[in-house]
Every structure is written in C-alpha cells, then in structure tokens.
Length: 124
Image (cartoon, rainbow, N blue to C red; front, top):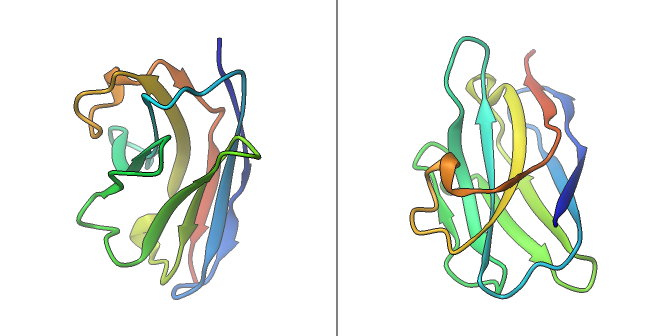
C-alpha cells in the first residue's frame, strides 16, 4: 500500500515559480511510474508530467514543456514538480499519482495511488 502526501503550492504572480512535493509512504518499486495531474474548475483532470521511479523516461504535456520539471529523490521517497514561468492558465488543483505497470503515462486511470491535491493559483 502506498500513501502520497503533498506539500507546496500557493499563490504566485505570472512569471513566478513554485515547487510541489509528494512524499510517499510505502515502497515504490523501480517499475512504478509517478506523475502529476491538475484539474482546473469546470475542467477534467489533465496530465502534466510523469517519470519512472528509476528516474528515466520523463514526459511532459506540451503546455508545460520547457517550464516545468519533474524529478524524484529516492532516498527521501519524494516526487517533485518544479514549476517556472507560471502563467494564469496553470491555475489548478495539482495532484501527484503513482502506479505500477503504467502503460500510458498520460492516462489518470492507470495510476492507483493519489495525493490529496494542492492548490496553485497564478494571478497578478
């Protein structure tokens, strides 16, 4: 059983930066995939970024490519999302997720474990 606890987030002006953290309790094996999704009001949950727990295969949605970076610290059992050059359209509730044998990183239904969500608001 894996539990994910998120921290970070908050409010920032356009062009600013934030870092989200997602600490896992329980073992994350090398075949796990960990990722980030977000959901804006009135919209469906959408893929943001994901990475294999081995550290390989980072993948990003086109909307965040070049601005966001996903990483993990195996010793701390923690997943991170560094978000730079934030824009108002990045405003959403952000969720971390983990799953075993995830085939399509972008599909939320392939992840078994979810964090509680953390709000990111970008406005001037």
